[in-house]
Image (tube, rainbow, N blue to C red):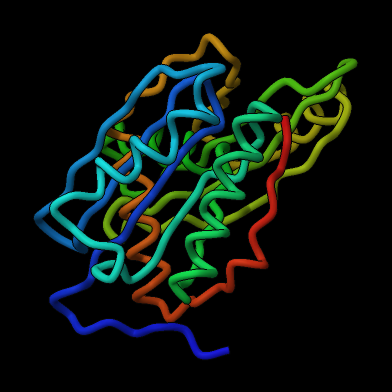
Length: 216
């Protein structure tokens, strides 16, 4: 399948996150014009997502989009599923690339952006069930807004994760995420757009069918 390649004036990226009780939407150009909005919806997500997304898009149109991105988890089972399904449906109907970003990768990118270091390695985890954690290690290069996977997202026993981060050399930060961990929604929105544009410029054009939810 050949994906749409809109002209430069239509280069907007759209990002959505539904992995927590809050819905966050972001839209923007590679540079300059960017905006976001966030709502605490919890159980109202399924009924409110479509109308909020429709209203948020204005004044841009669906035909103004170059790509769509969604956080695929780990996160809330129901919220993550709703967000990924919505993003997949839009990408399929609009014939656009769909980027699926790990919630852990976004958290690592945000953490690294708060430092003044040129390169920052972050081990980030989120609790699973029955003594397990979702863990991953990322390296972020500030100058290029680049994110490299050192150790991909994986569900493992807490003991194995502890051994993993103890054996990792050059690690700058260990971050444990949970439902109470505050996330700056503006930084989250900027992360989705920045990483989306970075992937787009690198030539990535993933099909909607490649993005699946990864539950926490």
